[in-house]
Image (tube, rainbow, N blue to C red; front, side, top):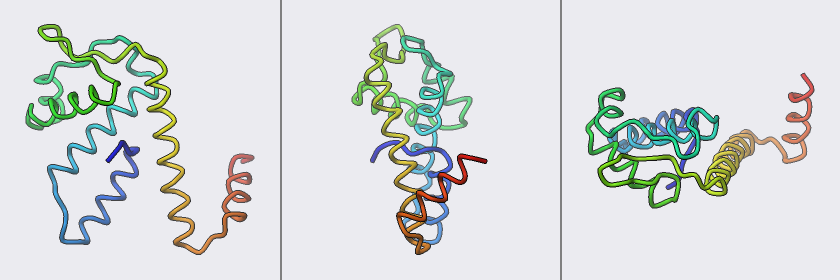
Length: 137
């Protein structure tokens, strides 16, 4: 599992709700992690910036502090967040890791879009043609 843009999470949840395998706590975790990653790639959080405390973030999101702790630990393993004992959690200053996150999010968004288009029977050529038309608008 990796990050997915917020609107993709919503779409996936819609699909999961139709099936029997829906897990609300997993969705909340993914949704919050996706939101945090979007803030990072949009530059709302700067390299080296201190993240909200686990308790602050949990209160803002209305979730358990365990959920936020899990997100921060996951992001630490990915090299995006540094957890400093007694000081808090900080966004990495490693701009290469942050760029990797940005690239990954773009690739996943494109992948979901292309998959949806193919499911609608749209050819790769037509997808490119439509994107070019859209970008010229």
